[in-house]
Picture 1: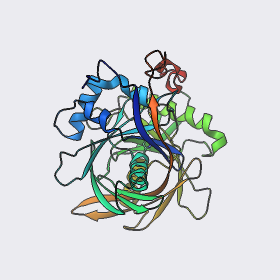
Picture 2 (picture 1 turned 120 degrees about the vertical axis):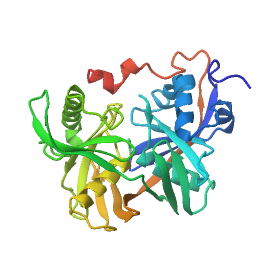
Picture 3 (picture 1 turned 60 degrees about the vertical axis):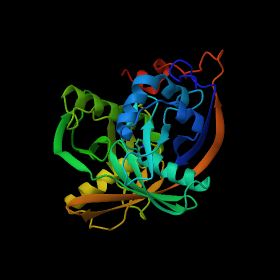
Picture 4 (picture 1 turned 90 degrees about the vertical axis):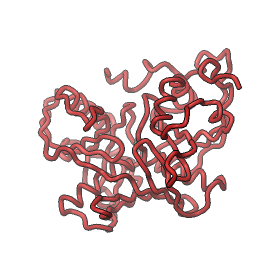
Length: 334
Ligand code: PYC
């Protein structure tokens, strides 16, 4: 087989979906996956090998003109964890994610709709750890995430735009800063202002040298607000590392949020918290205690949008995607 690193593929089979508007692209091309020589380590180790050897395929698969800024890709792998039946790692137009809630829900609905899994639960090995994923049939899926951890509470942060705010730092597979006193209405027509405010927060965190426990950048910013629909409990605007906003309520952020609400005495165990996205999509989440750990569950809906072959013609100047200088992140001066 031709080595993928020197000869990018000319065609790759994918299935696309959206989870409350957030796009996911699952690579289901057996030849492509077989040609990726990733070794035999954990999913996290094989993701690192992919990053080293094949990173230029990442933007080819996900960025314009074949994908979009907000798209998250999923590469399926055989698991190394004997308790798991599938392994997956997540990638986007600017890098790699240890876990992604909306893409996990999109993966479950895609595999279910294509007849590759039956209704029920399977264990998924992700770079963040083992995640129990359930396809409930039709458009419904849920996942039990890894246990969240809050590393800072009520932290004061001064932003270059003059705003002084407080918030919490937490992880549930990705690193988040959560704040309520951002001063913006979380509504679709406010997305440019919300994006600017969230970038200012992200820069302030970076300037202060605030990171995750292993030096990870706190690259997801969550601006919390009351729900617009009285049937729900909360709402959030979430800025992703690529500069795009999460179209969904953000599955990993919602996991961390329900755990913090529980710790703060604001949510009872096993009680549903309905979280809205800035666009109004809803996840139903809850948290329970198991063996001294908090286990969040997030349930949402996804829809298939395409089963297709991506073409990468040898004479296509954008065979490997648009250059990163053309991305939202660059327009924001990052
Ligand atoms: O749903 O966890 C999520 C997510 C992370 C980034 C985009 N979506």
